[in-house]
Figure 1 (spheres, rainbow, N blue to C red):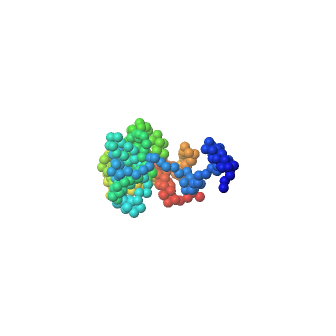
Figure 2: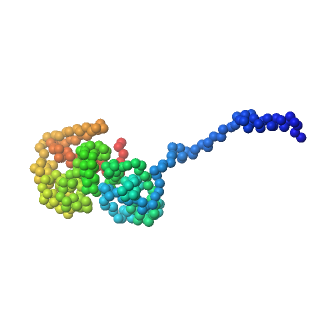
Length: 304
């Protein structure tokens, strides 16, 4: 039986607790240690899934042609494994829909696959036509998804929108100025020759050489020969050089040539030959070297 003293002590202790008095400090419960896989992760409010019918392609997208067989392969992959990467979209008050900034190929394949929703990254804020075109162009250029004529038209449109030179545009896109100038040269070709380049009958390399002629009839004639397989890139280069009154590759006088070009990033590119050469020949040599470098990049060849 509790004594009067014990009861009074219990009452006093409870009364103290009721006004915040503690006989000892409580232990603080620590939060559980996060899993290593969650370190650095954070939720993003601009990522989500919406009905695929709420998304439409951008009418100003530079890429126009999408191969049916390629779309079907991607559609089958979506059926089997689902959508691997989200597309990027921006809101259009005019269309009351989300407009694709990048990922139209995935969107079309998803429709073919019969899915009803699509994962998106929603661009917050306004995206100007120039900024949207730049993003689309950069993505397609990096993936080599544009045909030569599509690339040329997109570059020309960007130059017009930004009122800039080809060199400034190349700097903003982080591509070589020569790539811009060679692409724009294709737009100087007659429409029928551009169509042959678009369809792949005439290579962009041969078409660039043909564009250096000033006569449209001569351009059409050479393009016709190239389309029939009767004119290689080297032969096109030689033919154009002769028609422009320039010496051929094998007609240079006996004198050594050695030139060094400096790049903005500190590279020294040296070209040399035991015989005298021209800038046209140097351009041809550097073009061949560039193709070899790209081949090595594509095949993961390391520099030792």
